[in-house]
Length: 469
Image (cartoon, rainbow, N blue to C red; front, side, top):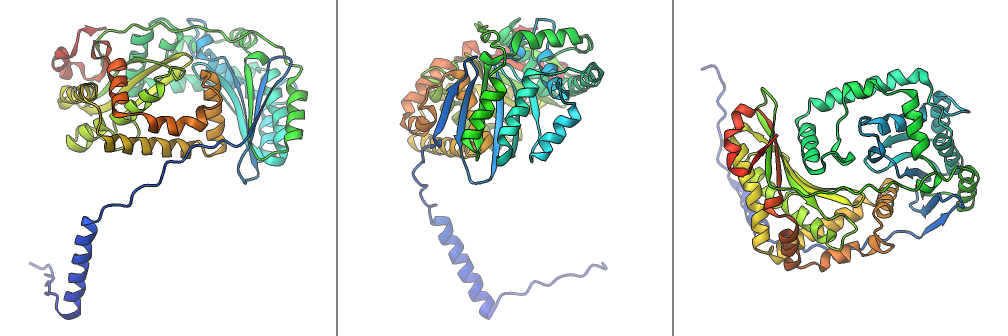
């Protein structure tokens, strides 16, 4: 009562004709197959120039694009791998500290200089490398190279900033400890690598508070130098001026020690670890194991296995299974995580407590299915097209080219890696993919980590393998 009822009138005359035409066109559209995709295109890297200084510093120049900007990135072979056992995140603090001032410039002057060049300066550390980089207007590329060289060679490490940087790290730690995916990853890495630096993902508040100026300076002196460093310049720039700036700015840097090679030894067995997170309504799952690193001849086949199972798109089997068909999770994914001469494959998903075991069952089912039977030709072709298109698109920028070149150099992938990637991916057959799955995704080697309400999920996990702490 009181609501206006809208009377729906029947279509007559011209409206009826238009409706009939629309329905007919819609029906025809449903029957019509989508157009065939174009032939996959190879990734073509513009001509690059490589050279090395007498002190061992290497440089790579790539003239790319039409936008008058250049990205400069210095990659140094030192990171969390090189931290003392009880100094986790020391590399991160040191790398961040470096842009807080040099012998000749304050942090404010560094930031102002970079801003005047149309960019900014970033620095940070990862497992194997630390970097200083920025994107500036082309005309300032030589000047920015000199700024990067000053930061790398002459960091002041002003003691007045240490407290602030440690507080930043304490806040980062607090945030990470609140995130179930980070907790799962930390347990997963610890299970694979044990006491190796790759297994030490999280620092502690006590460790961070204990960082001193002596520890930071000692880490820098022991790990930074020309022979561990590679400078990349990508974009539009005056090549002669850039090469002159590199030689002038970096030529006098100490050679320093060769990169430390500390290979990780992994030999996993099927196990289940539950990290208790009281009150959690979801379980975060990590399922994976060590695999071959990017320098191995099977690495590309393994990449296809990853994309086919859970990586990168709704074409992936695990995504289709536990997201689209079962509705267990919103954004599952798989990935191959790499370090120097090291890698692991892992499937990640966050699911409701009541479907923790069913989701695990489906993940393992899809892995077994690929091991037992090769994918159909069309399914494989769709994945190959997706991978090749993504590869070309991702690397078609200054930052993309710099990242892929530094990755290529770190893993020693060879000069033709980029130009042959697409054709090699498309040369793989269904049998190749099945063989790679059988060879590397072995059920008896799988590590399962679950972060969630232990009392709600522990019993349902008993059939998946021996429980470890």
